[in-house]
Image 1: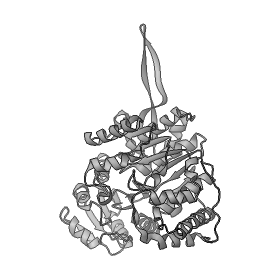
Image 2 (image 1 turned 60 degrees about the vertical axis):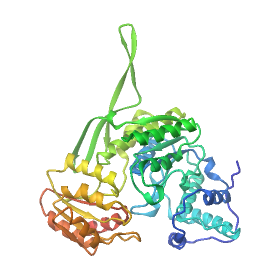
Image 3 (image 1 turned 90 degrees about the vertical axis):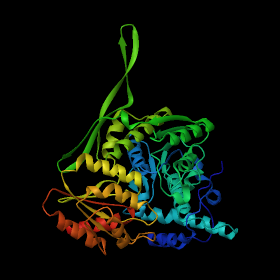
Image 4 (image 1 turned 120 degrees about the horizontal axis):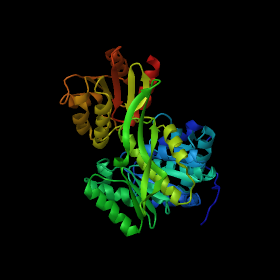
Amino acid sequence: MRLKAEVRTDGGEMRSETEVWEYLEQISGSGIVMGLESMRELMEELGNIQNALKVVHVAGTNGKGSVCALASSILGQAGIRAGRYTSPAVFDRKEQYQVNGQNITAHEVVEVFSQVRRACENLLAKGRRQPTVFEVETAAAFLWFYRRRCQVVVLETGMGGETDATNIIEHPLVSVLTSISMDHVKFLGNDLVQIAQIKAGIIKEGCRVVAVKPQQKAVQKVIEAACREKQAVLSYSEVGKARHVRQCIQRGEMRQYFTYPLCRSEKKEHIGDELSLKDNYSEIELFMMGDYQIENAVCAIETVKTLCDCGFTIRDEDILMGISQARWEGRFSVLCRQPMFVVDGAHNEDAAKKLAETLKRGFTNRKIIYIIGVLADKAHEEMMEIMLPLAQKVYTVTPNHPRAMDGQVLAAEAAKYHACVSYCATVEEAVDRAFSDAGRENSLILAFGSLSYLADLQKAVRELV
């Protein structure tokens, strides 16, 4: 395997973090290009350093980022230097690149992106195409993790799997599949089978696979067929094995608890002359709210249990502490408590169903006010039909994003499902009006629909509290 630490060219140098983000904006015109040819060429210029990394590769429709956050937190507790690459960013672009919970620094951003830019310029000089923004960001992640000598990298795919830039990884430690549902149909296919086939493309020859057990038999058949073809060892993550689930508020903080068998969770018992195995359930504390986070936590636990089979030492205590300390901004995140203001990145039908289940379980005793902003290419009508019956009042906004749906158009759609819908020209106006409506009542303000405007929401909330 050829590895080289530096690419020697005269171009590509950038002097500030701002220059890096401006460069990414400049090359954004290349759009989304499915396939690995350009990524292979780019990584060849960088010495194929990705082949020196030990990777947990995570694909799926919903839950990828949460599983990555939970698994990497557990690994950090176990004393393992764990890199984590996720997308998109919510509050800070540097949050996409972390080692043991710490973001990449501005200085490191300049260093690694300058090197990747030089590699891109080498390709252009050879008549190759400019790599996409996601390919450049992914290459920068590989380079930074290589420089930081990460022992494990938890790597989230973008929208796909088989043709995703991250899928240049050839020998993952574990391939992880979270829940699979309809999303990105323009690029991934118009039915669940097609989408599942692309997601399952991260399954490699002879690798270990952990998959959230699908509710749809057709998706299950796709995953199992891919594992048979690649002679991969499949284990399912089943949320039904989690017991005694409860939510509570302690010292003003929301959390939930459940019990689940951990790494050394099977106790041998003698019953007469026979030996049997009995599950030893441990109570787990989870600060990431939402019923769906139980499913993600179980998937993360099964992933690290599989890493134990790969030779890593991860104690039950590491799992318990790692999960309790894990945070994932933008997924049922509480921005303030009086009134309770929650943001959630639910942006497709499946995520909306799970978010609605969370509201029905723990918040039906509250006055619920929505702020909604969506991207035009998302299944917003399906989300409206699922979510709006639970609200007393709805405000719509236009996210600051090139693919944003006009908030006025969204308000007209929402009015089909709710009698009290208002459009707000700015996020600040929506937050201010929602606060006024909430007053001193036992209220919940929930903002959802797209991750792209959550940073603006956070800023607006901070200015009011």
